[in-house]
Amino acid sequence: MDLRALQHPARLVPLAFLLVLVVGTAVLMLPISRAGPYDASFLTALFTATSAVSVTGLSIVETHTYWSRFGQVAILTMIQLGGLGIMSGATLLGLLVVRRLRLSTRLVAQAETRSLALGDVTGVLKLVLLVTISTELVTATALTLRLHHSYGEPWLEAAWNGLFFAVSAFCNAGFSLYPDSAVKFAPDWLMLGPIMVAVFLGSIGFPVLHDIRQNPRRPAKWSVHTKMTLLGSAILLLGGLLAVLAYEWSNPATLGPLDPAGKLLGSAFHSVMTRSGGLNSHDVGRMQPETLLVSSVLMLIGGGSASTAGGIKVTTFLVLGLVVWAEIRGEPDVTAFRRRISREVQRQALTVVLLAVGTVGAATLLLLSISDFPQQDILFEVISAFATVGLSTGITPKLPAAGQFILVVLMFLGRVGTITVATGLALQARQSPYRYPEERPIVG
Image (cartoon, rainbow, N blue to C red; front, side, top):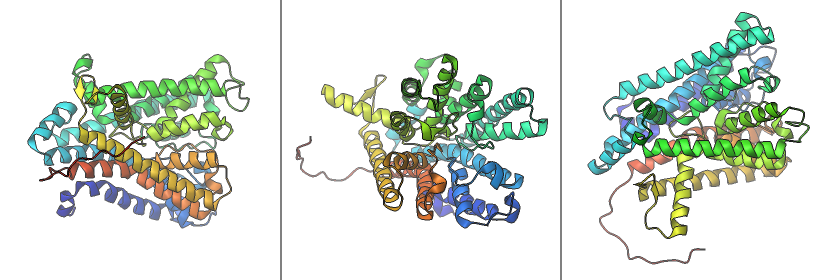
């Protein structure tokens, strides 16, 4: 690796992902990667590779019919590299940032993140690998047994489908080898349950898992980041569940025909998947407009920092909420769990959110100008791509080539953009030798 890249660690993640993306696209263009006499479409290979490496899950072809077993293995490999890369890459970038900050900021950052020891890079990566592999193996085993004993799949087929589901779930990738994602398992708790757990563990973030591992029975010792992530995740998951129940309870195309237990499972599954999981147990395109709007908001927020999930991240959303709350109450400081949130963090959160909203708005406008689909469907698809979720109303394969290329750019930016921006801001933090006179423009 070029040592000069270490001088700009914010470049490491996008360069690494771009390299895997190029190789993955080339592999998927090989004839051996396709299951039938399909054309070797560059856009199809590029779109699928980008979706896999960015662990999104959007697709313009059916994964189970278009791609051969070799192609499916290549996709699964890219998903795993994308999931592992984003966790280890984000964690390592965090360590590099802390190393380059001034001593006082380093001490504060180390106290806040406790789990990230500055010199234990090897230990950090080992734990990331341990959590990933153990979660995927346990999930794959549970799903394999269920697919064989309850759905009659041969052992080898059940094992492959179970492994693919497990890796896709933990990496929050949204890919499935079934034509309807997870619709055929809609009333099955023993299938959807392990998938939800894997998605949640993947989306919660490595710093949180490490913090809990260090102090499993002492929540008071957890960092503010861990507390904010867990609290925000619980609120969003419960809110999403209740919203889906309320709007889809009587919808004959989704939860309507199910009993109360099935409705609860379907609502919980959809709420978890909007964190960035991307799988669906009901037809998203036939959900109520209110459900799609709530889902869009949840997808844009996403999961935890340094996780396999996308979005602006839970802590970013909560920091802005705390800023608003402090302003309403007229408090000089923004606080959380008896700790003051620095102004640098507030500015970074605001920057990430505004950049995300601006990107989503611009992409939505572009897609509306080149396609005839309703605005709510376009907005849902754009947010799903940018937040690397993978849920779809079904319009992705029908978009023109230019529209699909826009989604490719969104998926790439959504996976590496927020980390790059946040890290770049932290690395560029400096003390100005002078300050301009203050003036107060009118706001509101």
